[in-house]
Length: 485
Ligand code: SAH
Ligand code: SF4
Ligand code: F3S
Image (tube, rainbow, N blue to C red; front, side, top):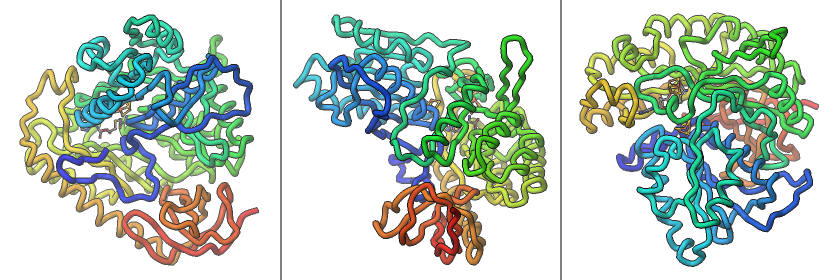
């Protein structure tokens, strides 16, 4: 997320960065109209914040509402139901939502029957309290209660406030086929599990998303296959900790771990690229790395959040790995998949972090030389282990200064990594027209680097070979030297 208060922009200057936390307030614009639809006369508008999981959930919500006859609009002024799918990961994320809510005051004045609903992590964290704090809100619906959303809307129409924040041990929405943002899409997210059992001491996710559960492997493969048949050329398998994916059928004749799931999805078609996020250093196995190495269409890119490079801080964060363990996992990646791109998340200024411990994070960055990094300063979250047990004792100025040091080093590494691509040729999946020029297209390499090149008569969804000619720390520019049929 953008740290506007300090003017420190931690977003990699990427053409179209889709990873965790980077997307704010995007509006769901169109629904897939290929299936029949019986309108109930009501319109809804939905805006999403936070991680990919939330964006993927908004597509599930769209599917549930559509089944009930709600039509999607991108003009909130004409909506009967305005939904914000929210994030609680840092304090700033919640402030952004509260500000956005205020901007709907006028709509409520002009059209008092309009209902406003809060979905997602903030709904789950604050529950009924949200109704007291934010008078504009009519509906509070947690991440496991989306099937109940039409009912909550009808309940709110009777003038009552409607709340459902029950968390579930089973809900995976496996049977719901998400409404996709765009019919001509190239790349889609497929949720493979929900919740998190890890209890990192800084993190609200286990409280807002509940217990970890894995989705039926057959439904994941079927959804991915359907996406491929509809023209999609890339799927990203999503979970807070994909390496602990584990599913078995009722009679236990079929058991699937993450490496096996990856293989099943990779086997759908060689032209379907497979990505995944997020891996946890404590759980990432060589079996997964070997599966990646075995299939060309599983992208050589791993998001492996470090958080801190110091073992004492990692222990306080309850990450359950040491600096040495993390280094060993990096060595394993480099050995099994020599050209693998690696990215990470880093938190600066966690409780009691000393200057030397901060230096350990910088030296780890030197060891790995990440292609990409998401960098944050520590934000204390109510109810987390860290908030209950430790003092948030690093002054804000220090947290920000350390963050800036991490950002500076990352920018240097990203530029060096990209410069090393100049003169080489990469296979790129074309995604769309470049935001900067109508005459250019852009797409990604296997290692998730965005590449820009002249449009010619090429089109999205095609694979091309691009010879890299120049770069910035965020993007590569090149010339198409080959087209795959
Ligand atoms: N499941 C993923 C991360 C989900 S949250 C994982 O385990 O890596 C995304 C990132 O937000 C985290 O990796 C962490 O770097 C950051 N984050 C989480 N809680 C935070 C907090 N309280 N303050 C600052 N950053 C935080
Ligand atoms: Fe949060 Fe840790 Fe779970 Fe990631 S693994 S969602 S950081 S508790
Ligand atoms: Fe995602 Fe934010 Fe929730 S990062 S899981 S939407 S707290």
